[in-house]
Image 1 (cartoon, rainbow, N blue to C red):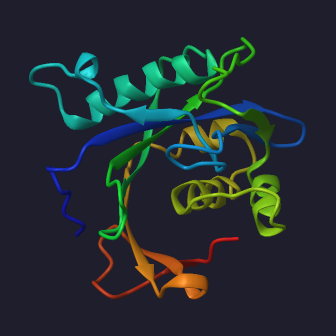
Image 2 (image 1 turned 30 degrees about the horizontal axis):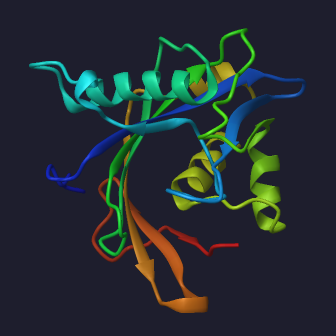
Image 3 (image 1 turned 135 degrees about the horizontal axis):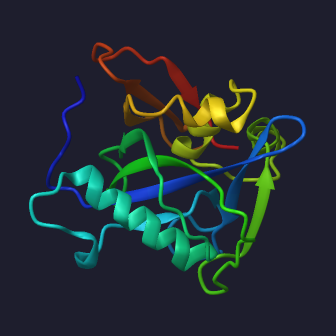
Amino acid sequence: MIAPDSSLPVAGTVVLLRAADPGFEVLLMRRPDRGSFAGAWVFPGGKVEPADLRDGDEEVEDARRAAIRETFEEVGVVVEELVAFSEWHPPVEAPTRIRTWFFLAAAPAADPSPAEDEVAAIAWVRPAEALARHGAGEWMLYPPTWITLHQLSAFTDAASALSSGGAVQLFQTRVLGAGAGQAFAWEQGRLEAGELPWRFVPG
């Protein structure tokens, strides 16, 4: 079982889903070419701040409040009903280590209004299309985003994806190799140590 490192900061991320014909789309935003995840396509979200904390609440609830707040600050979208989907533990080699909760939410009717200083571009895209753009070298996706999109691509509509939440999946990212040969792998849930069910090579 993956044991959480309670000393790490915590963040919350929202995967917004909306119906499309066919299937459904998710909202991705490209970070500016500076700061955390520079130039990468990610879901809205950010770290838990003091205002998100409530005495007696579990960590997931703090992350939920942070995810709601950050989604509004970054893309101007108000969300309320969030379904916990996964929790990601960063690799020990990461210069900035944050444990992140991923939540699914149905997108409201209002159009996103991205914050100019935090968002370089936004796109509604089907999960499979986002993965294809990464594979073609057009987009940069980090492992948690890539895996989340891969998981969502198995669903035919937003409703079935949203109903899949609740049983949170735990992931521990590991770095393999170095330099041009660097790749990422991760343990999921109760997998035995050393068993690597997925492998991700940055594009």
